[in-house]
Length: 127
Image: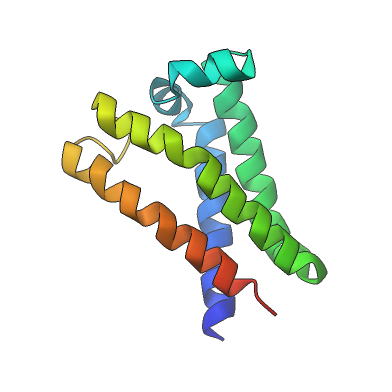
């Protein structure tokens, strides 16, 4: 039961964050995309924000709608959380504010949330 609740909460978090990437907080997320990411991916910050938002929404929906693939999707979500971690470190080191992350303490605290998210999704998608 607790695994199901955790998985559904993570799915809701992903869908909400992904939707925010595509709508109201899109500009705020562009601010925190590292410059090196645009060079590495050979694209602009807005594209990175939009693509990551779409990926978040799809992963969140998949956690709920594809129970037969739960383990694989959980690993994909964990990989996504790991992939965005360098951006979180960049945001903290640069002191760049974003919605809800407008102090050094909040930006630093978020760094410790990422491993919890990874562990939570791996645990909640185990069979």
